[in-house]
Image 1 (cartoon, one colour):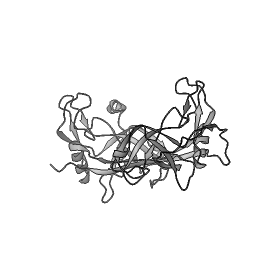
Image 2 (cartoon, one colour):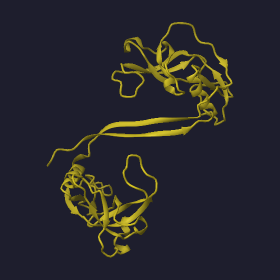
Image 3 (cartoon, rainbow, N blue to C red):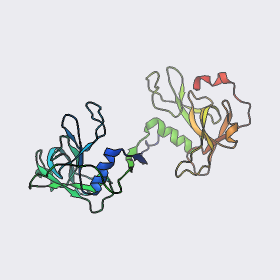
Image 4 (cartoon, one colour):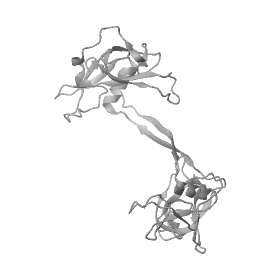
Length: 313
């Protein structure tokens, strides 16, 4: 058997959101080197501010200008910073209760080492050189032994307020498909599609999972399925995906390969999108060097009878 595969993978997408009046004032304030909290009816000051009281769900709008100095309430040392983190040298993640606030703000503390960090230590904001109206306008916190900052009421009014943000979400990880899916991927390189049969219910899973999710028993018997199959359900895609060189509209379908106990998904080509239908018989189309079918196309056979695939919907 070949070695189990593994590969680095990245999942990333931009998350765009609009801002209400409280969040807008908070982020615009950071751009202007002002930190705002919001006052609750019972007198608590929340930083970062929220638009609804997490205890009473009451709408909040009374803004307070809190200090740029504060106290560490808890911390954890980060000995190996990752891409995109606030500092590229070892630092502490800290929760800081700013002067005038009743809740803590999470950010980075630039410190010489974990031995100098402790709960209760005093810190202050180090502002970024260029500020745009984001939490990164606070470059980090740094140790501080001076006076506490003053706290004042603030109207939350600024010129050119920030009304929306784009947060770049990214996850880097190493994926290993395991024994069963490694065998599946290896077979695809030879243009074969294999699943594994459950020894109890006899269902053939494609792609194989190494165990039957219904019976809970391990699977090891390999079964070659397809390559032809039947469209069970499908959808028409009308929005073009970024970096995907496929013209819209196109059809993405669940396909029950002959001999398989459940359907897998694939793109349907070689037929107008509005002629794709349940029961359509299809076969894979491979491109040179590809490790999986590029799409599925009609075989020209008569449509499958509904009773032959209804259990796979």
